[in-house]
Length: 330
Image 1: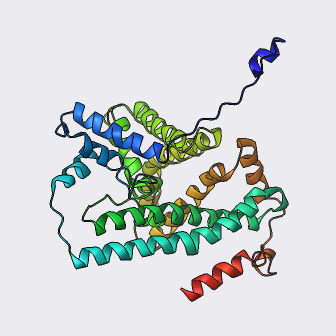
Image 2: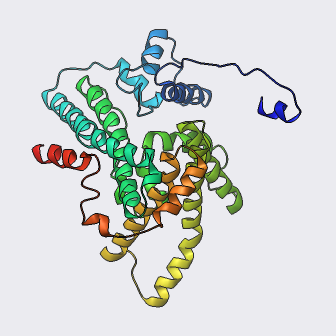
Image 3: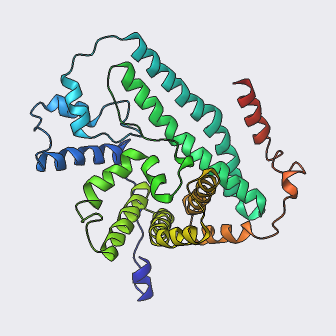
């Protein structure tokens, strides 16, 4: 309609509302893994339609993952699952930890971050920076909580689902971060997109093209919005830059006779990776790309540490008090 209006042609806009099934992005990828693995002869063809339907719609992980592989989950439906007290106990504890992450941490931080980034023009400087770190913790606890509940629920019934998060905020590089964050999705892209494209066994420029394509696809998977694509592109650039700068960093360390793998070096790398990830999150939490760049600008506008001490952060709609109250009671 917008394109035709340039030529003076009026085209009536019609609303198109499509009701999508819940968990469509997860079970689509899960189904694709079976199709591709079958094509590669990596799994036996499943002739029982009910067993295949159970694999696709396995209720613990259908809503939010982890995205399971057919070679891991399908065979478990043929096993006999006996009651085991320790396994059930561990599964319930993992579910309880997932509920704690969601209800106590993520749900409280959601109020704070939605308030700040929903009205970001009212804030600047340190308030936006602190809220961005809160947003990162919220996203992690929100997503990890669903994964832990799913893995725990499956464990109670005797099924093993893959680990989806492995302390990502302690990663020492962007590449390591993406081996620890949403593992089931990232390994899916590696197995079914990155490696078929040649992986790292190709020329450097092609390798970096593959990396960027994977991250752009990952961004698009999260939502059909330019902000998600920019988020994926930013993380792709960070990983490629880290790979290109690695030899330079090694030479500098050799000249200075400094071991970048000691405790201080590791702490610096962890902090730097943590900051880079949160920089990319600005695109994730912004509604539009221009909004994201405006948020970046406002972070350095009127920057002052005063809000840390004058009660500004603590008084943000009483969210912080409630959050601290909940954590202290837990």
